[in-house]
Image (cartoon, rainbow, N blue to C red; front, side, top):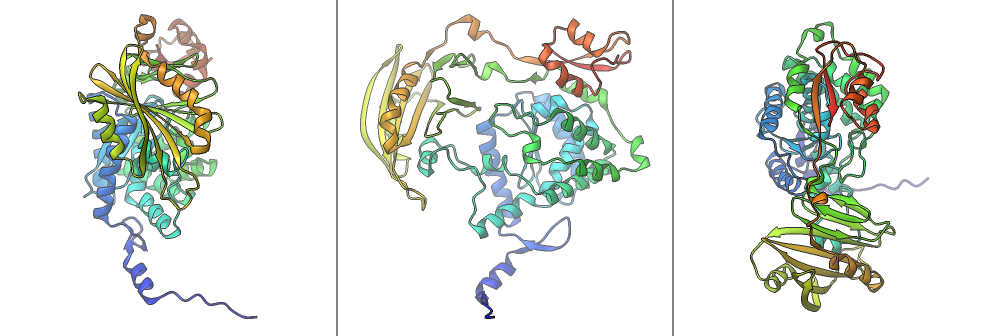
Length: 479
């Protein structure tokens, strides 16, 4: 049998050896095409993208509290010299994320679910574990060698990303799925860091067990749920339990302190930032509305609203920017920033009393997989101090068929004046005390909690609905 030998050039061998670095956690050499300085730069750039696209929960006291808990772990980590940052993402999905260089994010959804400082510290420790072991950096290094992207892509093509600005490394990091080995290592580090900081690492087990009962609460949001990015198995829970020691029970839990900190946090979707009813989108804070075709999927983030057709052959998006610039000048500037963009037609007219300027453009792709140009309609609408960009894109062969739908969406944009739509308020998590007489179900009923929330809130309170909380025990309700 003839053996086929693969010869690797000496220069490539030297380059790969030079790209190896010592892992701060294991002490072993491993592939790393990203230096620590590059990691810090990537983290800072990703942080700006994440904050801009998903938004930070506006509660300075809560963010300060979470930062304090996170910083208590830093001296016990393997990379205490990093400039760590902790933030709360304004999203109801239950999840936590880490970006390279020391950036840790918790959603307000995960803060509402957790029941003690010990639980949330274990989550922070787990994310610090990913950073300290450089898990995302290693994944990116592997992606470079195998020429695999991080997996998001654009809805239509590379050209769509150019026109809409939806692509970005920061957003892709939030969808990065870790391997089982990475998760086990992060669990072990989270237990180690929490214990060293004086917290009971059994909080990690309590958190995992709650997640297991709740399932993946991704909902229809723009972010994945914890179970999507941090695959949870019974084996992981058992392995984490095996790490606990008899001494751990005497360490900090701090249930009351934690629940006091999250009392009044927004629970679920915040209608102030936009909501959908009967194929119409309403944004009370910015006082606008528009309608869209039945069956289209809508995702709403802090940076933009994105609509995709049921066939996913086209997309529509809306963004807003504060600007006093003339609409036509603003449009020309935006067009100049689109690589490969060619203006086909422009026009201006009023939409429901608002000044607007419109461009139809073709975008010629440069990517290796590009097979057809993309056509886009860019509509700029002036409303008060903001310019709203309504963009629509489809492949050239599809655009003419979809254009009437695009036009109807744009022409439905108008100022929101209906008080019943403008005055919507979010639900909030409230902490009350059990009286030792009423069951959890009776408390929910008396407090007017929506019945569909009872099962989830029972898990969040770590009690069955038919059990009576002890007198003085904190109870989570939603009003």
